[in-house]
Amino acid sequence: AQSVTQLGSHVSVSEGALVLLRCNYSSSVPPYLFWYVQYPNQGLQLLLKYTSAATLVKGINGFEAEFKKSETSFHLTKPSAHMSDAAEYFCAVSDRMNTGFQKLVFGTGTRLLVSP
Amino acid sequence: NAGVTQTPKFRVLKTGQSMTLLCAQDMNHEYMYWYRQDPGMGLRLIHYSVGEGTTAKGEVPDGYNVSRLKKQNFLLGLESAAPSQTSVYFCASSYSYGNTIYFGEGSWLTVV
Image 1 (spheres, rainbow over the protein chains, first blue to last red):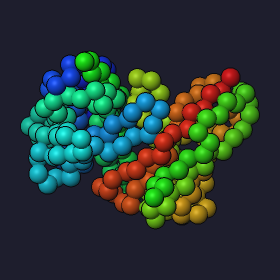
Image 2 (image 1 turned 90 degrees about the vertical axis):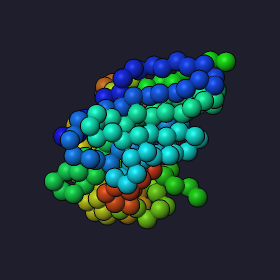
Image 3 (image 1 turned 30 degrees about the vertical axis):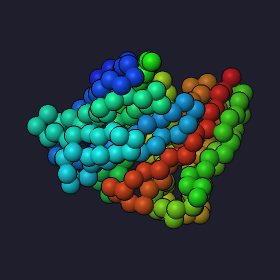
Image 4 (image 1 turned 90 degrees about the horizontal axis):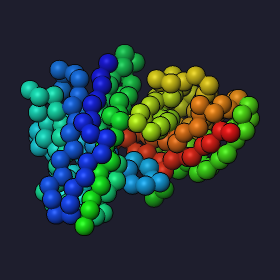
């Protein structure tokens, strides 16, 4: 079964600084990988997903993530943080069960704090 | 364009009471899911459905039941609520494997 590890439950950056949120997955087989963002009291919104096409994936709001098979990583980055980026970010990996069903396995989340 | 809609958004239950959370999607998706979100634990899959009339257990199914009588609706039931079921519940749907999963806005449930 797949698992996801997000390093750091909280990450603090200054406005304008680089954002780096780390995600490592467990499988050696290239899976489908996702980053979701959750704003306070809201549902999850897809930021980007990797589906075995380009290893550098661009998402919404200036975020991008790079799939590195050798490191089993899918870290999320943004060159310059905005105050509006403050939210919780979840990395997820798809896990195909024997029935063919796609289950999403989520990391425990990283809360991004942006200071002026 | 409603997407995935959950009702109710907030509910307080007493231990032992029952309730049903309703999820509706208007995207003609085959797959639907119920997750719960707890602090420090991310989201965990409760039950899922791969089509009308089908349901299956996820990671944490105990204490919950589901039904998918219509393709667009996925109901989550708590027969006898317990304080351990205090959580935020998210419904989601997708077209098929590998496709984007769309989430509802969540239902906050407190069991006292």
